[in-house]
Length: 301
Image (cartoon, rainbow, N blue to C red; front, side):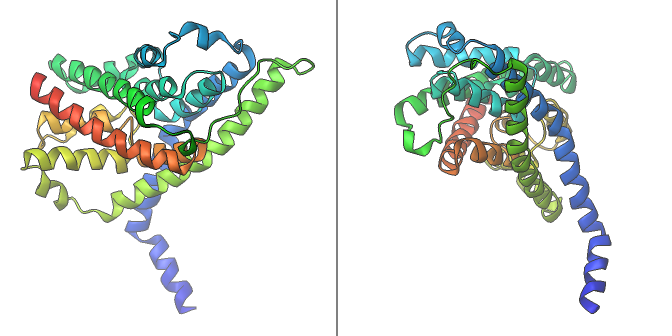
């Protein structure tokens, strides 16, 4: 009874309530974009001819990577949407390096994100340009890096899609693909949201003030903060703009790293492509994104 009473008090305490609020907020914020991604993924599987994407990209993977990176501009979604879409692209025969370039660029450079950045930083067009340039540079560099160093045993490759199967309704294929991808990815989204909420509750505000005075420390800290906060890319510019005690370059790093590496995205990638891929790819992306943010920030900001 004493344990039950203590547990009840803990569950009703402000710390747990704050954890619960952040966990639900991250999940609810990301859920519409996860639905969008799985809808697009299901539609691609059911309605798009198997060879359409391979014909649209250059045959040489090294050239397909920057084209796929630039194509990320047209998808108005966040990182939760890009994972199932990248899975479908690989299943359609798109080289993994090109699919990964698209996975990184789509949530970072689409029109909604760029407009929200312009609204969050009024009168600062250089911040919008810096975000666009740094994000495209990171996605392209990571695609080329996978071409050079990536190994097939690190990647759980989705089953190759052979096109519409005779005897099956296309709408049935669409429904089954959507149901599978949404239920599979949704569980990992919740795991990532719980991890992000735990960091929010346990790390005190005073830690933010400790790092804001150091040029390199502030960049690294906001990059780490972006990973653990797991803010949707459509909203992260407003969070970055509120961090007025940090340098423009540090805030740029927050906006470049966040859409490409965060706890819920790592969980989604692990569930889709395997843990061996997710850990290596996320670590490498973080290093490249921080470096690109520092260089572009020094150049433009």
